[in-house]
Amino acid sequence: MYRHAPADYRCPFCAVVAGQDNPAPHTQQSDVFWRTPEITGFINSRWWSNNPGHALVVPNVHVENIYELVPSIAVHVHEASRQVALAMKQVYGCEGISTRQHNEPAGYQEVWHYHLHVFPRYTGDGLYALDHLHRYTEPAERAPYAERLRAYFAGRGG
Image (cartoon, rainbow, N blue to C red; front, side):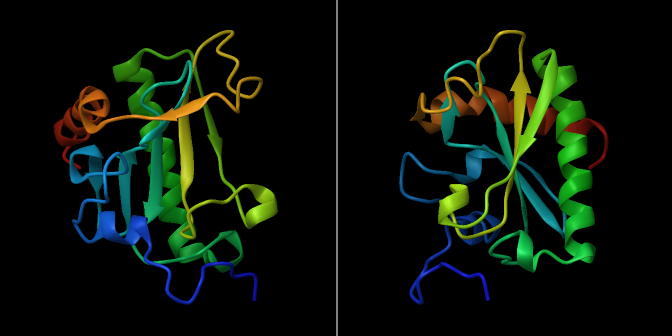
């Protein structure tokens, strides 16, 4: 009912979940730091000025937006986001966490697969004031962040 993906849409997040790389500089398998049967967590290829290493958590099944997100999927996405927030606190040493999620064009959704952003936050980082200041990064720049989170999740058996 509230779908906006074109009929021929090739979902970049479904590609990541399926173990495929997207065209550079977008998400590569090297950005993935956590997989479960229900979710995949990876470092976002687009960074905001003062919040490097922010992550996305996506359901492994294709769900376009929050309107299609059923509780049996949502519980895994949101619990994983909580775990990512705890991991960032420990391995990044950030002072706080923000999450955000977008739906439909007017809500600034750009990828037609439900995803939850998890941002490391620092006092005065200006995330929302500088919202327009973002850039695409290369896999090598993202690698240290993915490695730190991957080690965190591997060390806790999950």
